[in-house]
Image (cartoon, rainbow, N blue to C red; front, side, top):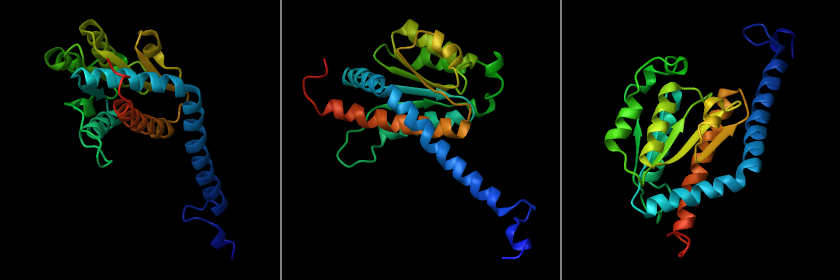
Length: 211
């Protein structure tokens, strides 16, 4: 191959691209593997607690800002429309109104507290509140989870890095992916809520586990 053939259109060596792809795959494997190895027991505990809430007629209510609003929508769809034939549909909804506009504002404590207001109107004590926050410091997510605590909901938080304020909020379950790579974090969160969905159904299939 000629010297020109060894270069990408931007002038960088083709070897740089291969190294970049290899590093991306390595992070996409290493980060979730580390997370799930450390959190396996608590994930099982969270699934049992969620299954108990569903068993008592509860619903999953998910919310997040910016890109994490799509995760809130995704997890709610997973529960309402099971991808595996024979699994029961479980009630879930996402609070996403206006969330795409609030990704930057709420981390600094600005913006509306629409999630908290919606929870006040829609939630019941037997429900589950699931909040997504990249750094664990989104003011509107924290406010909604505080309201959820006052109302008696099971509270599950998904975050990353050092967990920010999430780790100090007394959540029933706080799952923190120890990485500052937002792509790997979101990939891990997505795998996590797929696992939550699957294990909730496994608990439903074992009589006597739920009250």
